[in-house]
Image 1: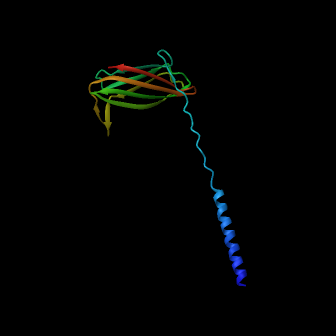
Image 2: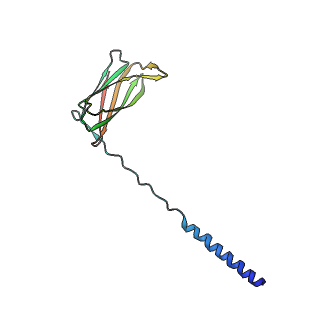
Image 3: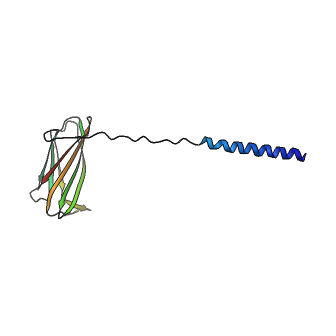
Length: 149
C-alpha cells in the first residue's frame, strides 16, 4: 500500500509539472504596432492656394491675419505665428474652422501674453514668421512667409 501511495504521489507530481509547463506556451502574442504615416504636406509657393496676409494694427499691439480665396474643399485652417520681441521669441497658435461656403477669414492676433483677461503687450516686435496649414478634402497644404512690422 505504501508503494502504491508513492506511485500515486509521483504520478500526480509528474502531471502537475507537465501541466505547469504547458502554461508557458499559452502566453499572449505580442502585437507590434504599425506606425501610421502622417499625410504629406504640400508647401504652397507664392501665388498658389488661398491668399494669406498679415497686417499690423496701428498701435502694433496686434496683427490681423486675413485669408482669402478659400475653396470649398478646405474645412480647417491652423496657424502659427512666431515673432521676436526684445531678443526673445514668442509664439501664438490657433485653429479656424471654415464654414460651408466661406471664402474669407480674418482673425486678430494679439502680440501679448495674457492671463485672466489681463494682457501684457510685447514691445519692439520686429520679424514675424507665419505658417498656415490648410486641411480638408484634399491633401494638406502649408503656406509660410516672413513679415516685418
